[in-house]
Image 1 (cartoon, rainbow, N blue to C red):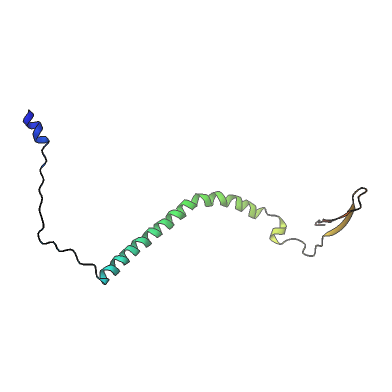
Image 2: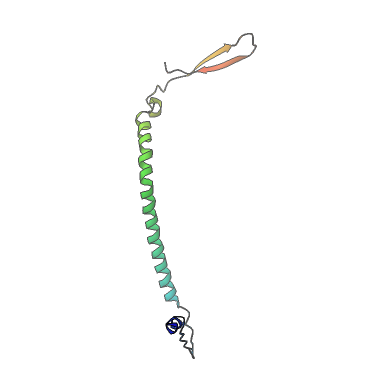
Length: 112
């Protein structure tokens, strides 16, 4: 039984030495252009995927914001839509308060 246990703790290594190692040549211009094009293509695909994810992420928020904006658009006052009296001139009124020597110019605007 002890012999079975010791065989489990044995590690066998095989090492091979390369006698005449020649390093790989530096990539040529065509290889570098090809690698750059492939990397650019991969980056463009990743950008397109991020844009789609961004649009999908904004989808629920468009629903949330479109309801209040629709209500504001259809319930806006007439002066926002340009349906008001363009010849309207504000009325100027001078008011003296109590015993004060100062007069205050108050512009009272009304649509009548």
